[in-house]
Length: 160
Image 1 (tube, rainbow, N blue to C red):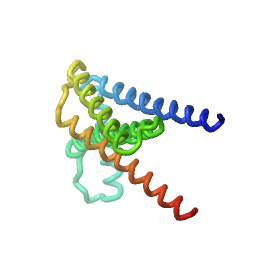
Image 2 (cartoon, helix red, strand yellow):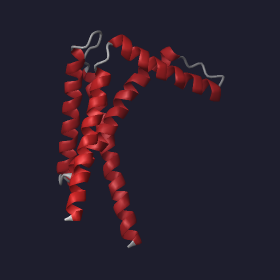
Image 3 (spheres, rainbow, N blue to C red):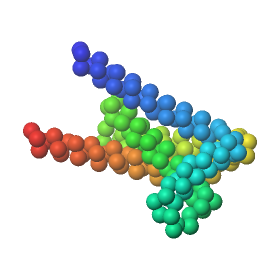
């Protein structure tokens, strides 16, 4: 009974994290182009200043790096979504290939809906390239989850 309750709580919290992260992605996608650019340029400036402190001879600029920062944000936000989604599915009993395929499908559909959503945001537009970047991030996140699970199981069997 106690174990079942803990499993239900774990499942609930796992899905809660998925939906909260989807909310964060939606909120960021809802930013008008100017607001989104200001945010990414601010992050890029911090990166450039840090690089210049470590390697003063580098000729990197905000303009050079900003596009890469924006696309990396897509990749890593969906990497985390992939991790969270496949974890929630595994907690819900969708393990193995079923969990992987369903998890990736959820992430790809969310990426598509996110780009469609951006069409209606002032100054923004949906791009198929971003769906591919998002989907790749989700694949990597799911892969990390699977590999980490295998490593943990292997470690546990060695200790037993």
